[in-house]
Length: 127
Image (cartoon, rainbow, N blue to C red; front, side, top):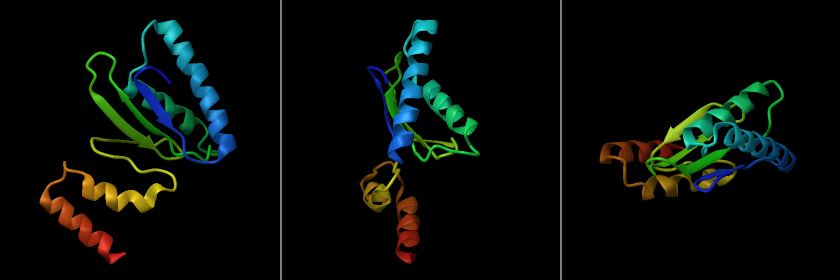
């Protein structure tokens, strides 16, 4: 979507193509009208609003947004569900059919405390 802004769209192929074209159009329109790069937080709001507008006939996609802030180069990663509910995190995001990788991501994540890791491991071992 930009030099420092990326989106992954796991989901139904036709919805992915339609949604990607809509995002390209609105991203280019934003860049032309504002004369600046789109920040990841603004892009997340745009994606979330587009998905929420179609909540009664949703696109079957789960967008993952990653990027660097154009001013501060601060990393940003977030995802949304199919009706646009955003989830911003500092460590990792799992979407689509990658739910099997969730435990691997949790174990490789170093930002969690020992208490959080042990509670999550106990939860995962129950199921």
